[in-house]
Image 1 (cartoon, rainbow, N blue to C red):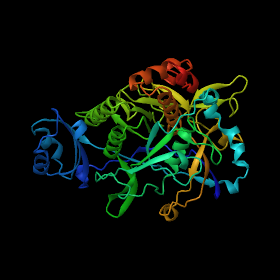
Image 2: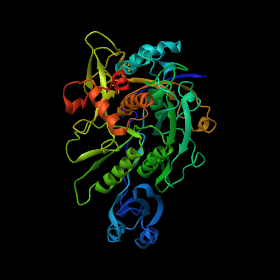
Image 3: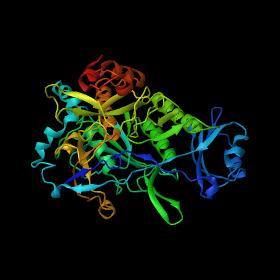
Image 4: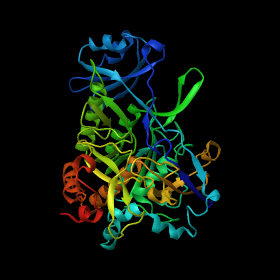
Amino acid sequence: MKRLGILFLLAALTLMLIPAAAPTAAQGITIRWVINYNGSSIPANAEAHIEAAGGQLVRTIPQVRLAIAVSDNPSFASTMKGMARVHSVGEVPAMSVPELIVIPAELNPDMVPDPPAALWDLLWGIARVNAPAAWDAGITGSHNTVVAVIDTGIASNHPDVGPNLLFNACIVSTGDHTTGACTPYPSLSFHGTHVAGTVAANFGGGVVGVGPNLGLANYNVFELFEIEPGVFAVLASFDSVWAAMIDAADQGFDVINMSLGAIGDFRGPDGSAPFFMATQRVANYVNQQGTFIVASAGNANLDLNGPLFNLPGGAPGIVNVGATGIRPDPVYPQPDAYDVRAFFSNFGAAVTLVAPGGDCGLPDSCNPATRPANWFNYLVLSAFVAPNVTCAATQSCPVGWAFAGGTSMAAPHVAGVAGLMRDQNPNLSPNQMEAILKQTAEGLGDRQQFGHGMVDAYAAATRR
């Protein structure tokens, strides 16, 4: 294995997927729409109605009575709302990976120690959620339990996650579900690999996840979009996320982790209500199939008590995870240790639980002028793969480890705990799992800042 250590700076809120700016119909750019239908099925004449309104049907999700269409007709939504059995019509957002500053560890040799076994001392997040106590009790998970990571892709050649990778799929905007539609090992798979490592890295090279023997399912939902003539970006359309969620449930996977999201607003004539409804329908279906859902709460330092909401995490039936940092030192356990809400983490009643997401050892920023010399150790360490288009085609990109921070890093701690719970008791329903996670969480005081508290792997996995 070619060893590579990478440090991410938090200049752009590290590794959190944020909504891409949506073009408007007035710009003459094709918009993606979700149509929520009433009744028990999508009408047989739905495609004809969509075409009559000036659109084109591109995907249906029949399990939840959703149709996805594209149209540059400014009157498309209002026309569709007049069609039979149409409940609501709204725009479908896309999500992007923000630009990051990347510093190779070869330039900073003290950031990632050698030999790799020394990385264990830097995994304060894994220790903070009490995973070692679960392991000592013989609870490490198994391949009978699978956590689906809906993200940018997972590096199959990484020794810490590859052995637990059991399934690969690519869900793209055209509705394809195939590893041939787009590469399951894309140039941006550093994000999905980092997330997967926190769920189920097996210490094959240097780090370990919460459930080191859990199975992993890889769903890549990112692809290349032309956002304006001649301008391209790697994005995930939200309907691809919905389709991946449905597929993971239909495959019988136990847990879904989504370290991604978008912010919606209920204000205005329609606001984001159709978008919220579609996400809620998908979440309900997934839960009914027995699959438990975890998502990140978002990195915008927003109060989620008002008209703003984050999706998918903010939908009922999904555990919405905020991020914490550790003090006084980036180790756990330590005398007088205490948790802080990470300065970027969204907060409010919509946050269910918190888990380590990392920060820079500062209460409100990552200011290079004031952060401590070991600031990167306050972040979350996990598996990494170099983002490179050329080597991605042959699954040969250099792999190693990276420090990163965000609610993207917090959610997989909870997903790993959920995997251990389901592996111990396969009969637990999603509602029962959420209740146990809340009951066994370590209370941290202010519910607006920390939800029901810090997830506890041992307490949750041993609760009967």
